[in-house]
Image 1 (spheres, rainbow, N blue to C red):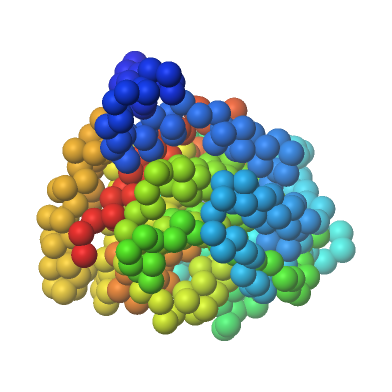
Image 2: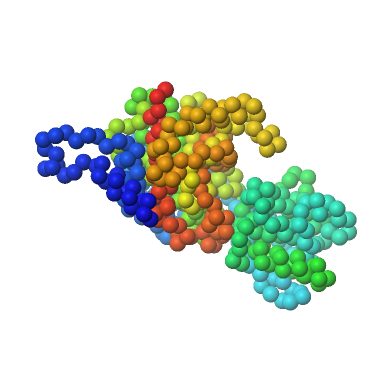
Length: 466
Ligand SMILES: [Zn+2]
């Protein structure tokens, strides 16, 4: 807290005193970054907004009434902040309904297991699917088994977390890999490095060439236990009941508001997040915190005595979790415009060490960037040296080359440099997509500091000399 308190105090010192104290001399204008930081760290507005979103609106999956409520609420917030051109840009989103779900271990010991269907999963037939569990640790291990050992089983992918990108492949494509070999359902170990017996949901996709079998996440604890049972020669038998199903599409929207640029209004810095969440917990870290931070950036920049040179456009995207329809619709609708940068906050609310830069103009080939991208990255990093002293007091002046955000990925693909708020994710993955993603896990001081860093970078990108 000491850093924040000192920062807030020093920022306050820069703010002109009461009118009677400055009758004679015109006070020196407060530098914009100091004003942004001072207001971000001392205002209650952002935290009260996050509390409202989490506690009164709650989780908000695409197509849910709660998401519609959040979309209306976000527009109200932007109007309160006197942003320009506040609007909801229509997007059609897929609707998936979880329904009833239950996983019962029948042997070697009868036990109810916590379970969450994966988003996009089909349901089970009435009465559920009952089968022996076959546990594998990788796609390779599954491939090496004969069909006879897989057919009729429920395949459980017990894959320990390495990185999110690597481990999430099993959540995304495990069901089709198992179905292709004759499995009747798929279970995945929750994608998390740490577990307190909590299942993690998330999206899955069916491959065209495989039967569609039900898919659900179990806890790390249950997955390892069933793995041990198999190795001990007593494989688990379970019954899985899922009522999940697709329910067509629904109208939704990206929420957009702007601070118009004073000199180059046609050049746009996008500040984004996703307003939808999974249908568990409160979507507090994923991505309620990111959305309220983005709103806070708009609010803080709108309060500056002088608008930055370029337009700052706040975009709360819809449908990141199960479709990315919001990010795609935005990129398509605004394809003719000049986006000079896109910033996204979507890796929780841990302390930000800085920003991850994504300049994949040609796309990473097998995990490596092209020479053109590497060169563009070097140029950008050089230019960013100028903003580092402004971010250093917030301990958020690090830049590294990495993924920036999925909603802004379509913009990045067309050449817009992407910036992801580079959060400490230690506390994020353990609660990601679970019932435990709730407001109480968020540190209000760190949360404000992250918003301050986002505001300073946004302002600098919008203000810097052409
Ligand atoms: Zn997210």
